[in-house]
Length: 131
Length: 131
Image 1 (cartoon, rainbow over the protein chains, first blue to last red):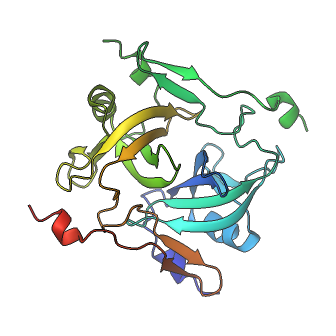
Image 2 (cartoon, helix red, strand yellow):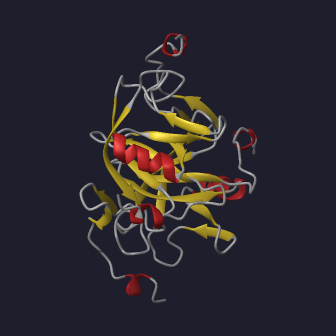
């Protein structure tokens, strides 16, 4: 199988690029994680989002614990070839480990200059990870 | 002016975080660039996207050359506090230096395993930067 599509990507000095997961239907941004070449190739092969966990230093098949798998609908690359965009179908509606749909649930309040939580918890994280 | 909202952000070892610019109306992802604390604070103060250019090692007021300014409508922070999301109004319709609306104009073709260009050039880059 050709790997030319991987060679064109500008990995950083750790061999990683940021990957944005976006809802394929609503365009909502669900989360940002990191990918190395192996995780990107596996994502393509398996048709689901597979990231590289920087904290655990291992492949992270999104949803492997929580069940919140991201089915891959489309993959995009930016002009600088250093950011990946995944258009996904978010199984279970929840992408964030806090139980919210999106990880971007904090909004800057212009008056108070504080990050306000503006999205609801849809699933109890204790239930999501209690396996 | 309080800077607590900046202190909560987890800057990387270069003092940067990725920032996603998303169309505030359509949710289309326009581009990803980088911000340091100064660029983030200036973005908030001036109400427009101001990035940190890694290649030029200086502040980059998006649109300063091209005119393609991004007016800031809303700012979000992710659960790990290491990615910023800017909801913007893209002046001039074009975010990418190639003259396309979005930098994510290449799509992985599943059959050929090549990155196919799927978005049109809206503005001639030579005109955008011919100042």
